[in-house]
Length: 231
Image 1: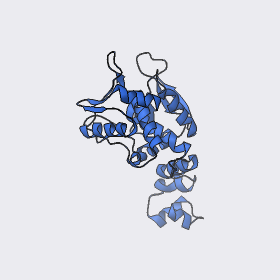
Image 2: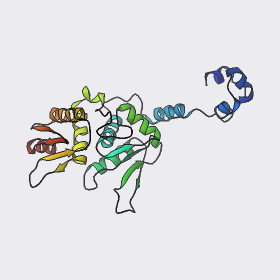
Image 3: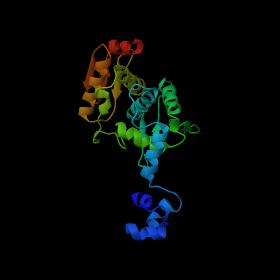
Image 4: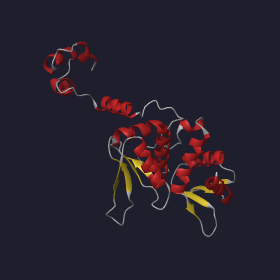
């Protein structure tokens, strides 16, 4: 791309001798004003306002919501496309859709016609670009099992408290299970022990009430859940 800028009047056949690459590797960049996927993706993300986002903006609020939704009930596949499976009876469905709209990606659903699979919410446009942005912010890419190297996003360490709380709300309401007749909520999932410790620490930082680490996840006391619900 730099060579093309330095030789603006050369077409791909002439430019290929300058950069010492076969013509077929550069002709779509030059003759059709094309760019590599990464370059196009960066431009799209910048145009959408998804890069260098101030944390105290609605744009970052939306990105934070989607990162939490990937952790708690979503995936980013090998093509960088995110898909979210928020609990259908939970407020997270609306929050995920609102976040996608806020970011200008729109929404579409998959699996509506299949009663045996959960309905997924996906970006309608620029899905793979948004997926790369979410991964850059710390969302897991691919598997999230006990063997995966999964860790909470670094931006949560020093972002405003309301963003941490929003992240926890999305995670707990989307992933938590109420146990028996009590108000205790458990998050049961296959993750490394270190991740359980990180998640419990984050929840403790934003609510008042005991939060426990289990062998298979995190247990949140009724007092902590009440604080999260009413805070």
